[in-house]
Length: 362
Image (cartoon, rainbow, N blue to C red; front, side):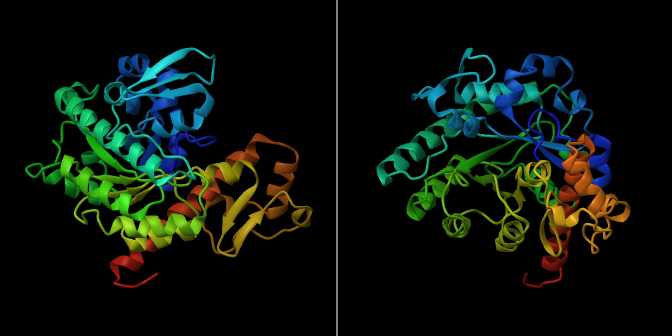
């Protein structure tokens, strides 16, 4: 899922996203709450109409962004008091408020409000954070069940999107009679597994989150500074305890190689800012490895960025031209770089699906 923090994937318009084959985006609850504000989005008919996007949208809970504020927040049992990074104004985000915002935004999939455990953390700290996340998850589900019919649109966008990525979501939607199922006319609320870097706490968090009952489950609290090998170990051990008949969402990961590994291991959904953020810094992913297009050695390179890629950038422009755009600080550099990286990530996922359906191992 490409990340559209403020209702926009940086540098790419919605029609280009559609051309690339993007069918579900991630929006950011914290940032959209601060601007343009949930009431503005609600009055415009929800985030889909506001940003003119007919595909599916997932919104995060805002927990990770509040976690990253560090010196501007205070966590209590009731929620998190924080100051805006924009103007310093005071705000309070509780599980109920996070649900109210996401319902108002009208996302197809919304996430329970959680506390992201820092790294490193003691086992006692990780357990306390996990317990708080579990209590907040129960409050989120209660509020969601009481208000889930207040979405600012008439039907779920997910059920109306023809999408390979969304097959697992639609299959979960079809099952509305089991614990955690959801109605086609409402949003879906996913629970989040925490527990720091402790495999046993992750197991306990997974099982207790399943007991609360959600139609999908996310693995959160990773990519917070821990070694990548530890990330992999925690992901793989946590997956063992999550139901295979529900979407399993790994938050904030990763490189093309990592998403291929995790998809093969049983992860259904992933999001990451890496393809767009790296593009803005001139780092491009290709079948021949990473290319730092800013390097002088590409100044007279007439070859395509990636000869094996069929995106419009690789079909039309040379490495020399892409290097010139970046060196000249032209806005087009960010647009073309982002377009290629997103295409590369989406093509990677299409390859992964083809291999899995063919019964092969990556």
